[in-house]
Amino acid sequence: MRLTFSSRPLPAPALGRAGERRAAWHYRLRGYRILARNLRLASGELDLVVRRGNVIAIVEVKTRQSRTAGEGHDAVDRRKREQLVRLGDQYAARHPGIRLRYDVVSIFWTGRRFVISRYEDAFRSVSDAREPWRWRA
Image (cartoon, rainbow, N blue to C red):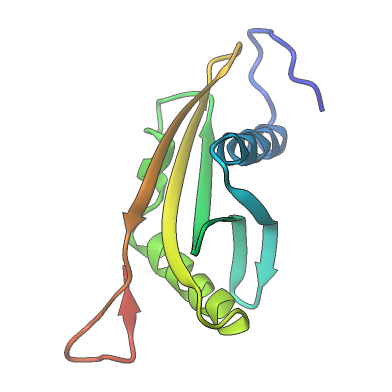
């Protein structure tokens, strides 16, 4: 898909796909290997799974073309972080011995170019002392 430079907004599905492709390119330029895109697991989907060295990053990509609803990273609330931790646990169960990190990439489409903000190690999963079987982000 080719993005045209017009003042009309892009449809949401096309904007999301373009943002995820741009995020993958961003990571590739920095020496990461793309392990998976739009990986479907039992309880949801991971946008990107990338690796550099012995660290695997679970990447949530949020693309916007208007800031009226806030920045893209603002949409990664507690519920979304907890879902990403559950998905990360499912991924880690399939690939034992890996070290996980959770990144958030916020992309803004200006109509001419993508403006990327990457939040490396944006949050960490912690266990609740009262309920150690339950993880939260």
